[in-house]
Image 1: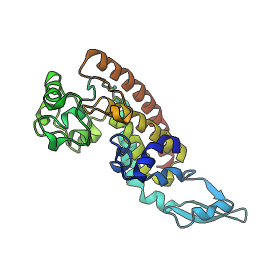
Image 2 (image 1 turned 90 degrees about the horizontal axis):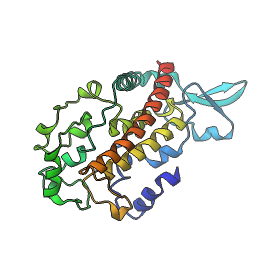
Image 3 (image 1 turned 90 degrees about the vertical axis):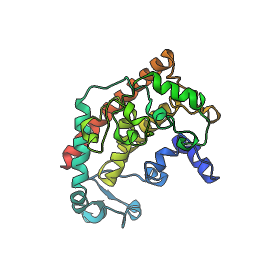
Length: 269
């Protein structure tokens, strides 16, 4: 875990923002400490000296196994999370039934700054092509975003350029497995269910989220070479082909994780 988030922790320690990694802990509110804390998942009982670390933590109750003290995730906690379990099950189930759409080329990040000037910049790094060049790229291709939580950050001028005007209800209607943010969000949904799901699954989702975030920002209009990221130049045919190859690989990993998550949630329902 420390290998994956070391750069983030180092910069956070000295108060320096990171335009790629910070997103995984700011937009997604899980803290590094939560990733380091292991949970076996609902239905497992922990015994031994280590149980003291779990006593009093959200979701855990004391039990006895063969006369030995232990801790486990409570049925009451499971009941309290039933609506979240239902929503996540429905979302990932519907997403999995749809074909992956691989024609967006990551232009959502470009749409977030389109004709917005410096005020629209979301990171303190320069645009690779400047404002005019960035706007020209958006105007040269259709916007096909299917992810509401990206679309809601589009500039006003970019909104009508999208194929659909998305609303919160579209989370269940248009989410599809080719979307980078749909793959990133698997980390969020597993994290929201806390100790009900095993930490191994959370870490697998986090690793995918990190991979997707890196592609997301490498394909963005921002120049991130100072942070060690080479651009995926989606304004060119070669760059778009590179993006689709990486996007497809992420979608495949996301599909496998949806199967794993769905199976565990089915056992909880």
